[in-house]
Image 1 (spheres, rainbow, N blue to C red):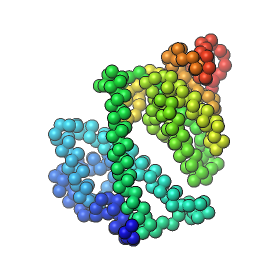
Image 2 (cartoon, rainbow, N blue to C red):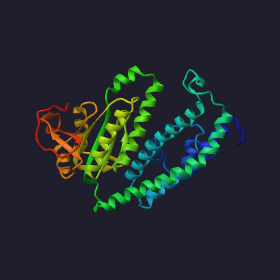
Image 3 (cartoon, helix red, strand yellow):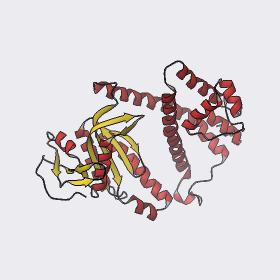
Image 4 (cartoon, rainbow, N blue to C red):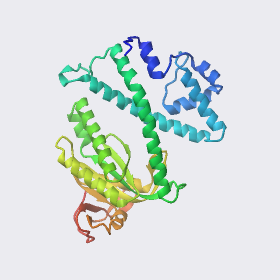
Length: 339
């Protein structure tokens, strides 16, 4: 540990070098038009720097490289901007999460916290932690990205249609019941712990069941699988894990199977909307699926789907929900209400 206590030293460590250039100087060195550079910076989520000395040598090189990729024809301008948005959104959230983890680690026992819920961290301590963690986190980031990229390519190749952006998949939404009331009742730190636990447990359970987590949206988890049985197991496992955890509220989950558009790592289409609407219909601690999913699960002896009464759903017409449980397969309709 160097023992540095200068804000500029910490800033340079995090950025990989000191801030040397104004906006105009950076774009001039990169050989890029100002409006083009602004478009990329906005896509990455960076605020307007004005005339401040805010840019490093790394900023200039990154701008130069992304423009070269477009001019060489490897990506169109639109795709490059889309990639920048995806990187900015994903890594911005990751950076915030990492900082929270580090601050929680430094916090020690609850009694040591300040009124803000965070420990007073000196610049020297912050620099020392960053100096040790940055190389490790940077290596892990590259490692995980390569593994995730490989897994995505493998899924596409196994599907037999590597170029298809629309495929039949089973989509699941898991939703925390009564989240708005919970948010009003809990303090900010307690609510943050619930959301973090929800995201962690959701990711672990979904992955273990053979499905894939797409994203978390505060009180919702979106997951998907090419295999309806894997999505069904993930849904039931989530319900059971949360029921066993007394510190967590109930979940309700909706599953739908059909054509799904995959774009920039997200899912779109009527199937996604149907899964979301089924979630809103489900009672706490239950899973509802559509008829398409129930039909696909017909040969699964460990899963049972019971048809409920049809009901109109805004934008989707009549939908026939099925209550999903473990057990022998049943197709007999019942007037029971799953909502």
